[in-house]
Length: 160
Length: 103
Image 1 (cartoon, rainbow over the protein chains, first blue to last red):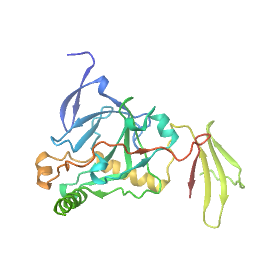
Image 2 (image 1 turned 180 degrees about the vertical axis):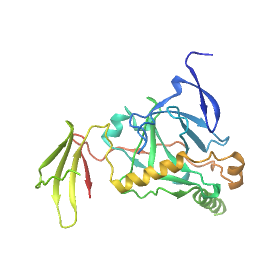
Image 3 (image 1 turned 180 degrees about the horizontal axis):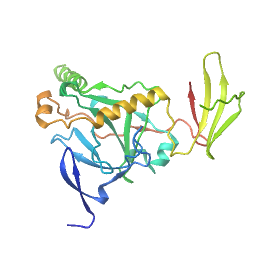
C-alpha cells in the first residue's frame, strides 16, 4: 500500500481508504462549519446521481451531493472575484457545482439546496460553499418532484 | 454589544483588515459596504442561518440506499446535461474586493 494511502473509520461507510492526492481542500470550510476543511468524494450509487462529500477532519460529517443540473437544466451560478481567487480558478469551465441534499426518513421527501452550492475547482481540488444573493433558487428544492417533472417533460417531448 | 454612531461615508475598522462603510441611509434601510479578506466570508444573517441549518440537516442525513433510489425511479435522463459549465463570470471587475449588503 502506498504511503499516500490513509485509512479512516467513518460512521456511515465503515473504514474507507483514500489517497492524500484525492483530498479536496476547503480553505473556508462550509458555511457555519469552518473547521471542516478536508474532504474526499465518494460515489454512493451506481447511477452516479448522488455523491458523498465525506469530511476527513471530522468523519461524523458527510454530505450527500447531487448535480444541480439534474434538477434545473439551466442552473447558473454567478461567482465573484473573491471566489475565483480562492478556488485558484483560471478557467470557469474547470469548476463544477453540487447541491447538498437532505435525506429524511422518507426518501421521497429528499430536498436539495440550490441556494448554497458547493463549488469545486477540479484542477486544484480546492472547494468552497457560496451563498447566492437574492437567488431565484431555493434551499429546499424537492428532488423526486423535480426529477419526475423532468421525466414527464421528456416523455411529452417524445410523444410530440 | 459595542454601539458606535457613524455618519454617511464614515467607516469602522474591525481588526486590521475589515472595513465597514456606511454608504447610504434611508428611512428603513442602511446600505453598508464591507471590505474584508477572502478568508472572511460575508453573508446576510438570515440567509447564512438558512444555509447553516440546511448544512446541519444535510450532514446528519442518512446515505440514501440504492433500493430507496430505485424505488423513486431516480435515473438521470440520458439527455440531461451532466457536470456542465454552471459558473458565470462576475459582471464587472471590481477594483478591490468590496461587498455590499443592505440591512
